[in-house]
Image 1 (cartoon, rainbow, N blue to C red):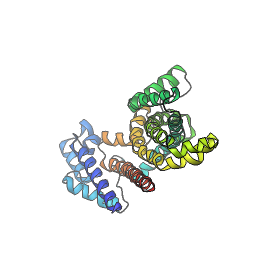
Image 2 (cartoon, rainbow, N blue to C red):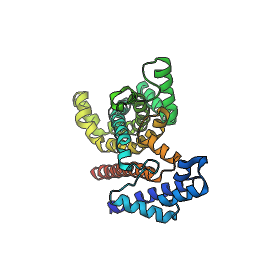
Image 3 (cartoon, rainbow, N blue to C red):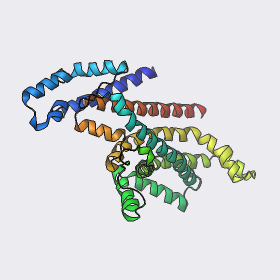
Image 4 (spheres, one colour):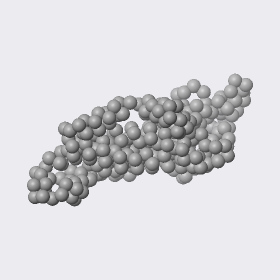
Length: 305
């Protein structure tokens, strides 16, 4: 049943994106030939690439190929989409993993701290900071970081460009600001729910009884409090994954980071349906898995309760 729902949601998302691209003016043939192409040349290229077929037929053709592992070719270069996707996907995956690690450690840690000190100055400071960052769009957070670390302090590059002829991984500094941008937004989304769970659990009678019995505070937190909050905290972390993915697309454009978000925007600009659909397939699949995991953790927590 879960697999069927996953397939239906994935199919619906891919179809909507396919339709949205088709509604945009122009297509891959007009983008390739530009103003110099004649009507006959454009029609010939559209026929060669199958762009003159009905939308449903084109989507069915792409879907059939994707189901068999063939993501098609980049119209402009003839390069397999799978090959074009590997590099950007690996760079975005690295940035995402670093950001998620920061969210899991710092976001959860600050949420636990605020929950344990509910109503105190440290709680208000952490909660207010999280609220401020949460209310800011990702590109604003990115621009603030650029202003501070690239323009004022001049310690990090404002644009994530790798050295010519070298891999992006050979210049780790280009990952710092994009990763920090989405990590801050992710942390702001995690801190508040974690804080609420910890504060509620911290007020339970068995926690108070452990403290009154003379159990050291560290032991109370690590052995009694946090295990009870594990499922809700894990759910909050799983729920933030789609936001990190969506934020990555925006942040990559701000920093010109050579990842899947930039590739996706380029695919829209060049009207490359195969590239756009491959990016959509990856991003929606990861988001759906994250949502499913979050729901599963929530149900597990409710059953344990």
